[in-house]
Amino acid sequence: MITRRPKRNPDNPKQRFYYDHWFRGLPVQQHALGPLIENYLETTLRVLQHTTFQQNRTLAFRLDLRFPQAMPVGPVHTNNACLNDFFYALRKELDAAGTKYTTELRYLWAREQDASPKPHYHLMLLLNYDAFCSLGSFSPSHDGGYELDNLYHRCVRAWSWAIGWPLDGMRGLVHVATNKLTGQPYVYCLHRDDAATFAQVFYAASYLCKAYSKPIAQGIRCFDSSRR
Image (tube, helix red, strand yellow):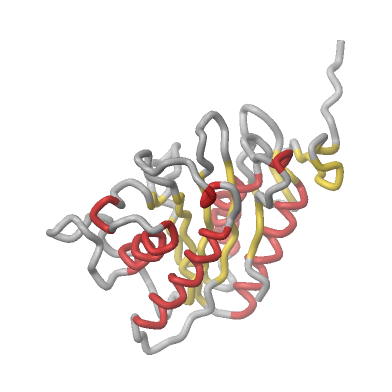
């Protein structure tokens, strides 16, 4: 007997399921426990295309943001206000860096929650490569905090401020995602006309588009992007 695969998400019929391993000629990460959401793939493609149109070189990287295990479940976990606070704080950090070149913070994000009582976030961040060309050291400062001027430490400080957690307790809460096949971090220099790297960035970002573990039935936004 042939099992029919649903075309729509039963938790939100406006969302179309996607089962192919290629989307408009680009590779995507299909998840073993379910399909991707086509609407999210379309948004991802739009944001990446717009970003490469706006700037010649882009630093693209995947981050995972988590809450501390020691943090009690509370109101901060019931909505995405902390993520808005993260982007606000990160913009402040980028401005404080005082680089010669300015950068617009463009992004994609996904909220996920499976068996854990708290959600977590997957992000794809897109910055002007002329302003920031690397993440720098992932290790904490000598005092256990994250006080360096590199981009990774700025991301950690932004998440620390957003969730109200001390810097010396932030180890492991801001994770640079890696390709499980190669072991390499999802960090790229994306040139405007580099189709091969564009495909790699889209593949990395497509992980955010999977339907699995998205708490859509809770009535909470589970995916969004920058507008400009």
